Image 1: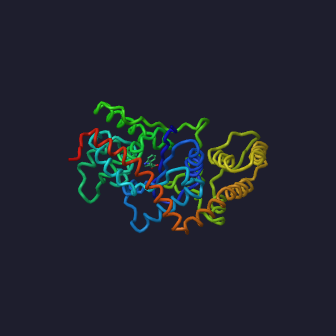
Image 2 (image 1 turned 135 degrees about the vertical axis):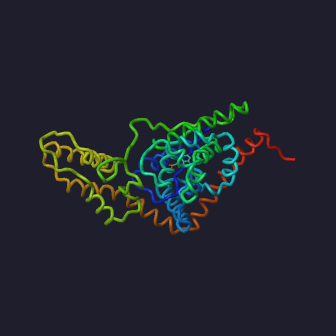
Image 3 (image 1 turned 120 degrees about the horizontal axis):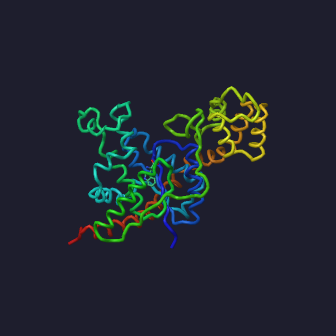
Length: 349
Ligand code: TRP
């Protein structure tokens, strides 16, 4: 039996180059070797109250991006979270075994709760502020139980491997704890403890264009797969640099390291070599590097963008894909849910 791999992306907007190299391109490789489930987490997106008018188009764009990047509905189970009602039921059941204390201590919860309450200080003790707050600004319970829902996504397919970035590791750790706890409480050996996927080698970190840190939606430093040529070129040309190397073989500042990291992802080795040498002998012109970088990024993104646009316009195809995915995902989810109900003592007359 093939091991089960599962991962999802929250439906909160378009995917960027960081998502592509960090997640999508890996999913595409994995689908050949694993029994894989890839989904769009639209219920998770509700925790931050998206505009109902755009939620569906966000789901549609991620779905199209999955397919355009090479996820194959014949090989993987590709589905939308909200199409699987079993997830909602199991979320209720699993919540009976999850402590509000551990949920409140979750880093992602504290960050988002702070945002929802408009607290700018990073005081760690926001519990009292949450409890004491009036109802104008409230932290919704869905946000608190985000980790339960994510654990259910994973456990309902009894997945073994969950490829996620560093920011999701705490959620995965909680999933393992919930699985262990459930097994121990009922004296069963039912849920496997899922682990992150180790691709070997150094993890790929795609930097942003603003000189520091990684590419991220909320950082506003992204190159989107759907960016048009002109927009993309402009973004790259505006990337932060420094005043240039002052002496041969100087160490690089972070913005320059970041540009080289991007160059290494998209350009041929001799191109990278050329600019490295130019940096080391101080002849480099950052404008030339950026021009080359923009063109090489476009070589990667243009075919993907064209496929995304084609796929987005093919509603019949998209609905066939999600129906097929939902059918396969529900089959597996329903089986787990039936087992869980039975284990917990819920019986039919
Ligand atoms: N929380 C994940 C994120 O924000 C998305 C997600 C939801 C997920 N359910 C999941 C990822 C299950 C992996 C497995 O990136």
